[in-house]
Length: 187
Image: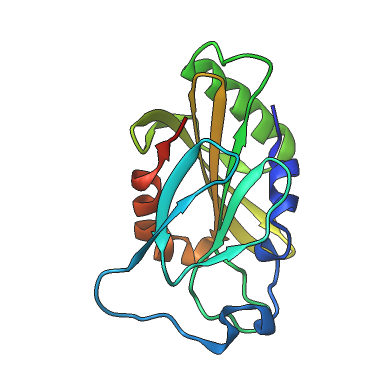
């Protein structure tokens, strides 16, 4: 199975310090009223979802099927709130959700040495039963927090990873939850 070390670099600059010129193109997001949601269906993948119109789609590679960055207008040195969705087809379906979660916890422990990682808790990815982990670690002097949800259907394993600076992690959680709830698998 893939590792966070493979997933996080795939989203590239968005997880690091994004330059202002690449963020929002000078536009600011609306701050009142319900978010306008944009439908997205991953070409060549097996899922669709909706995300806030004010979030930015970013280039992605490899197993990462979609990368979104929160609408927050960044200043130089700000940490970008990023959500990455990966889809994999390992060599056969996972034996169980608990087995998938146990394997993922082992990987996270190896990939983020010294990180504080919660044990797997029940979660939903749309209509799929899933497991979630929350990891906290330091990167370049910043405290970072990661929410990761894993789920599978048939032979397709889906991993959603939300990464943010710990001090502002909760700011985008309602939007992240809406994205998770909107997730649907496709044939």
